[in-house]
Image (tube, rainbow, N blue to C red; front, side, top):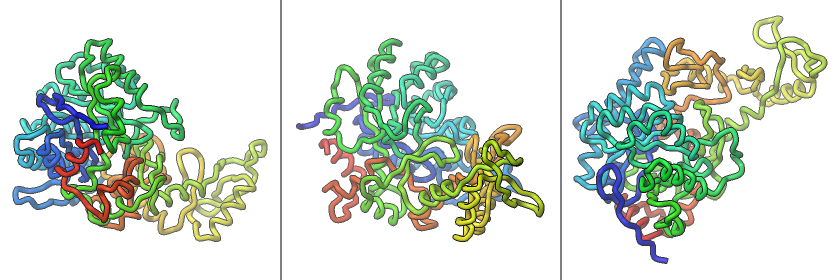
Length: 469
């Protein structure tokens, strides 16, 4: 079946209904976004800790000089603003007057409002829209309307959008560009699964998107586009969605496929890894310090996190025979310790014989067991925290007074800023860093378009998508 895709009005211009998904920490940048827009679509660069590029086109790395976390946090904010402005300029120049340029931000990144305002102030006229998810961005509409920029909330249910609309967005309907439905089971990166949804039972996105359309019709926005994100690879697989009167205007967001283009800034080793992945290589997990579910490639980095949590036992500060905590385990200073269940103590002794000798407390009154080297790494990363999230489970950071979540740091998680910077800039082998990806990533190895290791330009990829394949 031939797919006939028609241009659609997004952010004030007629463009192909193809949106580049924004991927944080230097993975979607001005170069990739500008190329996507030049091909006639909507290019998206990430405003999440964007790389700063100077007037000579040189990357300027962030070197923290602050003495404590709050000073490093302020350095990160200022760098993020300057970095995103530099990426907006690159995207604007490269688009050559074609397409649209959007910036993607995460509401749960620390000081998101300050970064967003700073970038929109410093890049006036260069950014046409802002996509935002990872939380409930109630103030997104007000900020974007102030700068006459369209806003695109990312939601995973009609319920979430309804709450946003009733509390805030109804006051700024003029600047609502579209609603982005991001499928929480299929999309890469952080996902919006609710506590009522089973991470192991993916739901059909059609009725979930139709519920959003039904609500848009209730509020008089029946022709507002909905952008389908997560699990999109070929448009001929979505033929029942295109021009479907039940769904109304639908655009499609591509997050994974733009990773494998010549303009994509990710290291060559990452691109080659993408060409070799197989079905099932992506896991939906909950180790992220944000507390959200997220999808990433199951590599050595993710495997170590699973194994770390599997070497875990509950404890009590006092003996509790009724609950079974009768086995004494020395912990900390001499004479101190906790009570375990006898079977758990035997497991702990096996782990210690295998070299996992260092116990670490979690916020849920459990102990995990790691090697001394891993324990030192975890504590060092916690101490080096620069406050990249509004609430961080790994370090216990909070971006406003009293500057702490009030919960002990969780050693079952990791420093997300460190690992994403490492993989984006090729500082370590890709197998040993967090590699976000959508669940369709295995299709690079199966799609004949990428045969013999072919890596297309963005324009070639867009043309391929427009052909339906």
